[in-house]
Image (cartoon, rainbow, N blue to C red; front, top):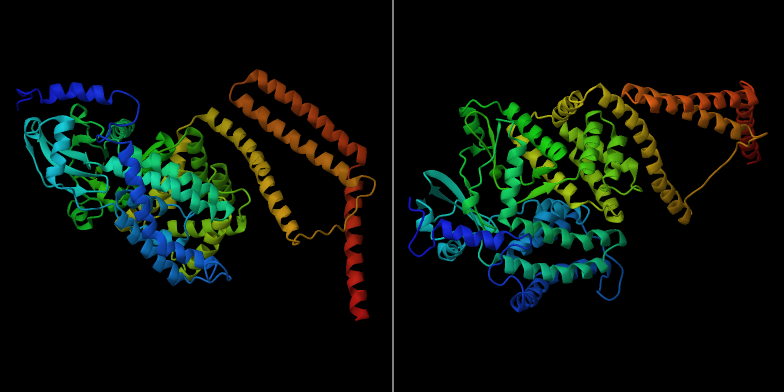
Length: 601
């Protein structure tokens, strides 16, 4: 293959100009006019088109609040009507093009924004559109990497896939088959214009939404803009692919394509073409003798490692992006959509996984609150029912569809009332979990996610030494205390809310004589503090912190003396017995009063 060309358009000369164009850390190279008057003019035109498209739906929503637009009460909306509107919304997103297709996919992961019927319908939205003609793609390739005929030994002009932002071709480079991903020409200008439209319309929509939803709506445009701009920068995708490949370098059963960095830019990504059968092609998997149950476990473990350990994960695991090789190795494709989690979020997420493995619903809810995915004032009983239902589905149990619909309707209504503030990174985790569940169920109908999770949690626990386990035990005591403190504001807020509605009633029948309960409280506090100090002393001694263990031991001794004195002051049982006697007298008095009232009637 000839790597040079007389006119200087070969790879060497192109590489130099490409490096100069993309070496900075600023925004990606434009299509020629990424900003300016053209974008503003297009944004104005798109605003008119978008308003016209959504106007019937907007009128319908407004009439739900004002039957005759300017006056009249609200009207009830049936589930069939919601689903009909959701279908209209789906068609509108498709007709408005790539940006709104991506927006619809984002909204399908956000039950804190849209009602359940809309989320369900939008989840069918596929990022598959007809490809741009070769005559439009070739000039872009020539500009980015040089003359196609000179750079590649052969190039198939028919794309093997087409998405809203780019399309993929196959070619031969240095004797090897490669995949060439090309950003659609002019797509950045179109997307930027649409983002401007959304930045105008979403704040207006937020003004007419409930106060609890305004926060989410005001932030979703920024989140979406950041996400789609990342997806349009193929240099970032290449970096993500390489980082995830490094993270799995020690796992021979996970395969990612190698990036041909010399021929890749922010608008063209050239990478190794890795063969494999579609992961949901069950007949092909069975012909190759691949154990599907083991494959499911392998896939789930890979994602748990990405999410919990690495903090960088492939966020689009639909069957078209997953393949399996002859020996059962899993191949990942398309890293345009990737999730990133900070260390603290990963720790909280692992805490959630531990709670799932231990079937501890309260701990699961606390983990959601800690991650900022759930308001502390949420209805814990309703949330507990929801989590129990999800756990049952993960176990593969048969769930009553009526109960699912009923609970989801309640849950959805509460979510619309509460400021859920679901962060974008956690929304991606939810999306990945949902899509992955479908893939795993296809591979193995008896798949039990809880069993896989328990094994993963157990493996993670055994990776740490004795000192780590002791530190973890001490930390868990602190976390338990912190968790109880964190619940107080939400419970207090809920109580005040009930008080404002006149729904809060209190009844006090037991009175404290001679400070009985005050002294009892001191005994409880001193006893609890002594126990905590003893645990801390043992933990510090176990991890080798001798000096701090001595300090903690001294504190434990002092608290023990105070505890003993508190009991000596009041006598062993006298005050407790007095309190019990008072309670009994109070209850007897209430019963006698009720009896007299009954006789009076």
